[in-house]
Length: 389
Image (cartoon, rainbow, N blue to C red; front, side):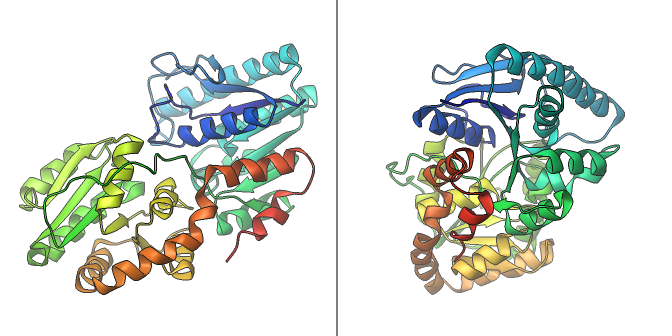
C-alpha cells in the first residue's frame, strides 16, 4: 500500500468550502484514499485551523497565513511572505517524509508545492509528480529566478500533468519531456433543483473571483456598452474579491443595478441551482488554462460565452458548447453578449452538446488518471490523449 503525501497551497478550511482549487485537492485526496492508499495532505496554515474529519491534514506556519496565495502581487512584502512559506514548508516536508516513510509526493501545483516536493526528492529521494495550473507556468516570470526554479521542479518530477492542452505543451517544453493533459474538476450536488429566479428573457451568470485576471471588470464595462439591449435581461454575479468595491461603484455609476445581482461566494448547491436556472455562463477571463467553472458548466449542461484565452476557445469551439470572444476586451465581450441575446435558438443546441464534454470534468476521471499513473500502468500523456474529442 502506497503512502502518499499530497502537497498543496490551497485546501478548504472545511468540506463545505468549495469555491477555489482547494476543493479539487480535497476531492483527489478522498479519491486516492478510497483506492486503498494512505494519504496525508500538507498545506500552509491559514487564519483558522482546517476542519476535515475525512482527510489527514498537516499544516505548517508561514508569515502571511491570513492571506490567499493566488491573488497576491509581487510587492516586496508579499515576496518576503512567499519566501517564508517556501523555507518553512521545505523544512516541514523534509521532516514529514522521513517520519511517515512516504513513498511518493504529489504536488498541486508547480509553485509553491512543487518546490517542496522537489526538495524532498533531492534530500530524501522521494519521487514526486506535479500537476501544473496556468497561474504557475504563465506567471513564473513575475518572481525572482522564477524561470529557473520552475524548470528544475518540472525536470526532476517523475511525471507531470497540466490542466490545459497548451499548458501541457509549455510544461513539456520546459522540462524536456512529455506532459499529460488533465483538466481540473470538482464534485457538484447535481441533484440540486434550479433556483427560482424572476421571469426574464435571458439570465446571464458569472461565477468567480472579483479579480482582474478573471475579467469581472471587462464584464461590467461590456454590460455598459450593451446598455438598452439589456431590457428583460438579468445578470447574476456569484463571487467576491479585491474588485468588489469597484464593481459596486460601476453598477451604480452605469445605472446597472436593476439588471445585475450580487451574491458573494456561493455554495456548490447555489452554483448548481443558478446554473440550472441560467441560460448562459459568461467567462470573461484575461488569462486562464481551463477554469473550474467551465467544468462545472459542462457537468450541469450550461452553454458558455468565453474569451479566447488558454484552452477555452478550443474547448468551446470543438465541443460546440457556446460562443467565443476573440479578444479579452470589453468591446469584444459586448459583441459576444449581443450575439447571445440575439440568438436564443442556439441555447438548446449548445446545451445538448455539453453532454459530450461531461466526462472530462468528473472527479472520477481525475482520480482514475492519477491512480493509473501512480500504479505505473501508463503515463499521463497516454491516458489524456484518450480524452481528446
